[in-house]
Amino acid sequence: QSALTQPRSVSGSPGQSVTISCTGTTSDVGGYNYVSWYQQDPGKAPKLIIYDVNKRPSGVPDRFSGSKSGNTASLTVSGLQAEDESDYYCCSYAGIYTSWVFGGGTKLTVL
Amino acid sequence: QVQLVQSGVEVKEPGASVKISCKASGYTFSNYGINWVRQAPGQGLEWMGWISPYNGDTNNAQKFQGRVTMTTDTSTNTAQMELRSLRSDDTAVYYCARSINWDFDLWGRGTLVSVSS
Image (cartoon, rainbow over all chains, first blue to last red; front, side, top):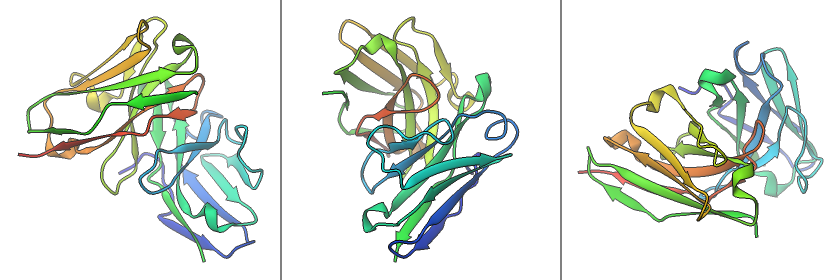
């Protein structure tokens, strides 16, 4: 069982927006502004798409955005495109002893 | 080219040890931490630990303490992770991933470790 809770799957039609939630505790998501999100295609390594809750690395489309409220972080994908169909994982820093925890992953399907 | 290149597939019997390497290129190796993250078949990501190539400091997830050793060689820009006393549930793809702050911005392609008798 993963430390952070994500929905197993979400879906949306091209052009729509979807939001993936990531729920933790005050010891991880709620305690630090160090939430990151990763996109993983089948058989590939994860790719960083959001860091520090809401920052995008260079090259990541601005259709991807992140936010946080309390113990829950969210990833929103706007203007869905077929290429966004992938698995998405959240990750949070959880202090010096636990360090990093991941969510269980969410499969995004573009209908 | 900025990249992390990992060693190849490993097949091990229960109780054995495995050592995986991760060679960095295209950036200053000592300026970034190296993390190890694994993914069991059909499962999510699991952080195993971190090592600083700068000074050798490590921090391992409690689950793996006593069973994992992480090292780096700055002369070859290579990180290694050894996992001992392998069990069938250690079967996974093992990734190395670079970090400078609180995220993993560069990943290797992964090394499949299969544990079976």
